Image (tube, rainbow over all chains, first blue to last red; front, top):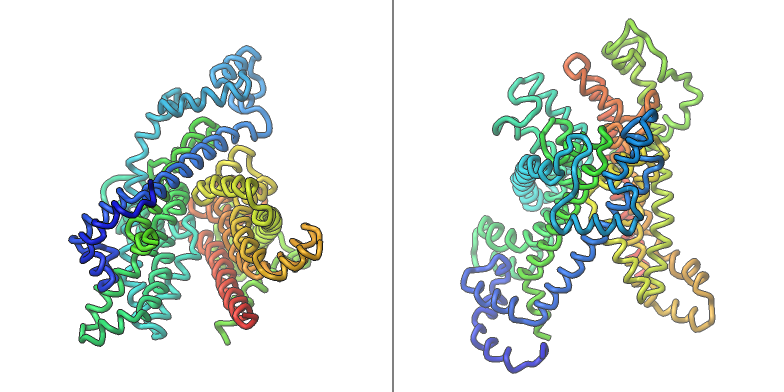
Length: 357
Length: 267
């Protein structure tokens, strides 16, 4: 039924003007509002798109399952006995057996796996070995701090990358371009665990403008966000420069210039809008690196988030907490990637054009 | 000209430091209590660390660590990744699906998170760092090799060798992989930069080499505690790290341009 042409045909006519508008104004990717109803309509009604969404969600679910299994398997990869590590070598056999039982390690692996997945489905990740508190509770306490840091870093990245990328593309091969490119290259090469201490040294210790560490008000967020956002800013500005330069070569840019638009209007309305789409996708994909980097950044600044929880758990050999944190971050990453993919498919006119054939 | 040779020069310095280290009479573990945290001066060009060990000597020792880890990880992950990716693309069908799923699962772990988890579970140590980073690293090569082989196996010369009755292993080895090398080598050069940062990051978290072994990451970690009195302990290894990564990245860019031009000429 999916490919029957008749039900589509009247709607094609009905929205024909919108379709033409998008051919004329290629930058409808960030849509003029009049095209939105037609777009949503087409996305959700067209079987092609629906099939795409379902397939994407299915594969995301598979990946999440695989990730969960892999994280579960990690504890079995540990050389030596985690119970012995936790209790020390002189522990009584009875205590060991008790802990092993509490952890469920005395059961066969498939049974453990069943309990693990059963717990996952009920949002029960077990208890921390250190504090005996439910891990979900621990993570929920720390989650706001990490989200705050990640969003701030994202904001920093965009605020730095946009002007840098535009400047570099518009003034291509000038001193501006060269310095912007050097800055972004350095941004990519500076690891978080060095940039963090460096910023602390300059802005907290020497200048005394910002707090060294902790999470206490907006001032304490500045340095961690800068540390975490710089690498992303560098990647984004390089990407933006490349796509801008590509877009500036398009025919419709020449048309826009020929009809007498100011250079600012050409850049803002015709070039940037089209160049931003791939950049937004990269932004989604880079979020994983951001989450990974957050662990180190949080440690540098004693930022009480998921990353610090992970490191603390690693040092205490609190394996269930380590597992849970890794699972949380990875699943978040998969979810963000899937959403980025879907949004991209929904926004990119070419996906809609492809379904016509 | 400067731009072209600077990265190669920095890398040669890095390699040279490691190769020449045995002849330089270095004492990275020698402690001079009277010189704890002493700034750079005549006695030691880069000053002393928090235990009174000369920082220059430790920097050279750290260069050895990062080069050792980088080479091993890139060699291991490139070999495994290329073989897995090539087989996946060449075999196709169920195997390809399965391997792509596995690659997807590994790619779902952000950044060096999986390496951090593995290193923490296996305990610190340089071998464990290599294992952990290779576990994460092969995926990129596998994905790239798969994409390369997928396109190459469509070419006429492969069809011709198949019809001549050449064995699959020989086709992959002699007629497919030689054409897939260029991007893989470019990927390997970027991987070196990634591994150098990752190794230093793991050592920074205390999951890398164990004291008294030196790593740029662990020097930075020790230095963060004495930043106000001895900023050189953070600055020196950090600058070394950044220069090496920058140089490797730039060299990777040059390699990529070079590979591009060649493929364009070959048409």
